[in-house]
Image 1 (spheres, rainbow, N blue to C red):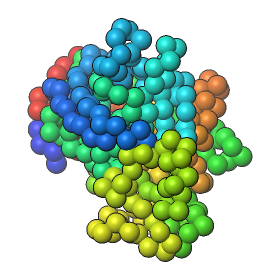
Image 2: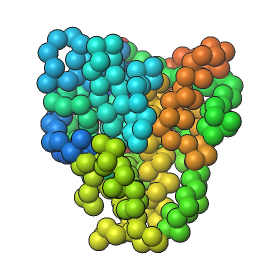
Image 3: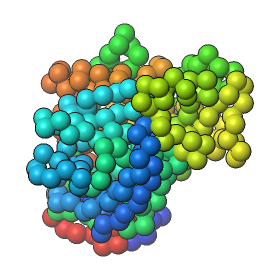
Image 4: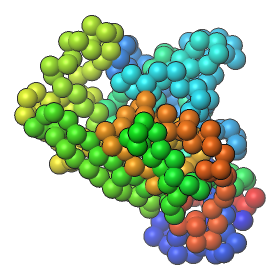
Length: 324
């Protein structure tokens, strides 16, 4: 039986030992469009409901045939320069997936098909908030299969400890960044992703960059669509965006957001503690490789009873509960 919903404030109090957290998808499709950060082209994106056990699947509508689909999984990551890019055996790619993946993780969406007419997810405002907004607009529905989670059984690390994951009662992240810049400098944040904390504390944190690096990045074919509308830009010891920062520590909050998106490429919600020291997309993906190479370090499970309190739902609840 799934968790019964009455109101947002009472859901978690009404859990019974027999209750099991069920998979979720969105109620109906919804569309948005925007500029791709690296290519600079305009991209249209549609989120569509998917059957239970589908997972997250990207589908390129500008490419015909079955080869246009890519499952959002760690072993399909083909590039981690400046963002996370997925690819398949047909040579089809989808780039800059991490902000959307973070939103889906933070909102507790298990199954979804993402259609887009280009090789890159639109950057929107540089955060996950526009994607959280889309999910919130259409709402979610419970499905007739239990949500599968990945429980971490022992500590796994990579890149000399730059990233590690250890057992825990829910998904939590402890991230430290250190830049040779007075504005960004050294920041750290520890946060648990429970009870809507992603939308409240992380979703609005934008990607950031340094003005002196822009010319070199564009010469390398990157950030052609970057602007003050979709990134925090730092020049010397100042943020040049007119509105300033959304959080005092927006830089590290965005790195936490990125990590949540990268970790959701595990194919399920992770129950464990992630620690990153100046880690990025490459290190995050290397950690997932190390994790899945050690079958004794993790196991699949379900969330029921008191454990269901740790289920990630983004404070977005289905209108009606369905029974399995």
